[in-house]
Length: 116
Length: 112
Image 1 (tube, rainbow over the protein chains, first blue to last red):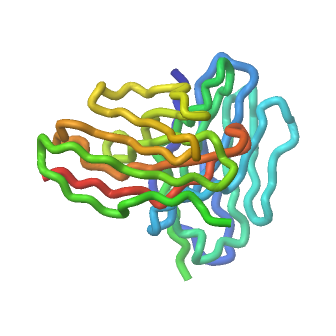
Image 2: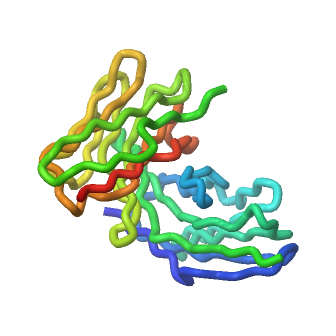
């Protein structure tokens, strides 16, 4: 079973500053997908960004970008120009769709608090 | 476009009872998955359905079951409730799973 590890359980960042969340995973597979999800107090998990393992280029979505290091099995998320609405739990997730297995394996999450 | 709708939002049940949770996926999404979220265990996969067939099941006891209907709506059932079943149950749907799932706001189940 794949494991996903997130350290730094709680982080605070000043508004407009940058924060980076780390994630490592363990797999012997070569074809897989990685995701960052955000869960604000409303409880709904929101997809922030997605990375395909066979693509070397790091994914970006507006203020969110990742640093994907396949050999190191590392997938960090950078939030630039932090906004108050970024306050949430952030979960790193792994999917290996081989054999029709579309389950997500999640890390324990990082609480991010943006301070005005 | 309506999102993933889960009902009810909150539920309080007594030990030994059973409960049914409902999930309506985004129109056109045929894959529906369920996850349990607790402070201690985090997010754990329960099951995945596609076109009314269970494709994958997580490591949960047989008291946890689910089904999917022809309109892709899904239900999960927990029988003989235990205190440890208290959790947030999240449903997620997708058109193509590796593009990412869209989650509902969950059902908060409290077992007393």
